[in-house]
Amino acid sequence: MTVVNLRPNESQDSLMKRFRKKVAKSGVLSTVRRKRWFVSKSELRRIAKKKATRRFKRRQTVEVE
Image 1 (cartoon, rainbow, N blue to C red):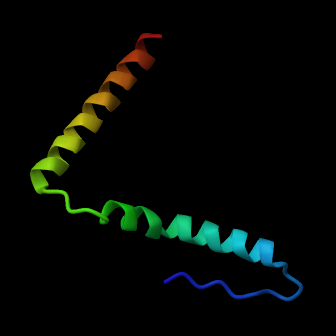
Image 2 (cartoon, rainbow, N blue to C red):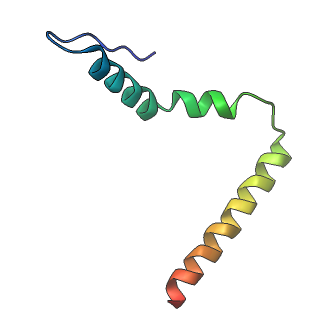
């Protein structure tokens, strides 16, 4: 759980900004989005394989240039 304490003479905007940064850094939102729907293991493997091929192709184009 992410906790942010109000500092003396701190505005609400800067407090919210610090809170958003902490939430983003902790990875809470990405975990919630990922677990929103059930994804089978075979589907996860297929997605991981697809990502790996895209990454490999990108690296090859960078090396050619």
